[in-house]
Length: 48
Image 1 (cartoon, helix red, strand yellow):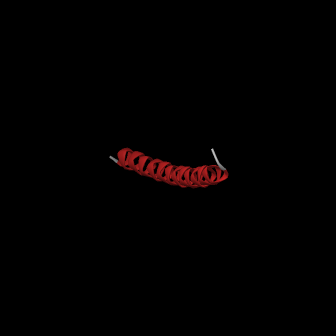
Image 2: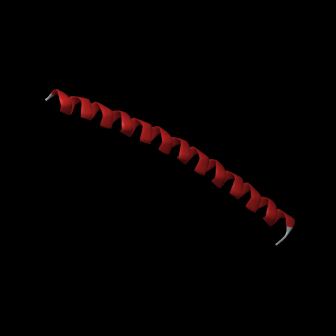
């Protein structure tokens, strides 16, 4: 492995870590949205 390959791998790793971080943030937002919808569904169910 030469220096250029090492740099390419470091760049790829950084890109993948950024993608993972973005996906984790999206997952958090979706879980919060799901919790909200479940709470709303529970409220509607109580009203029936």
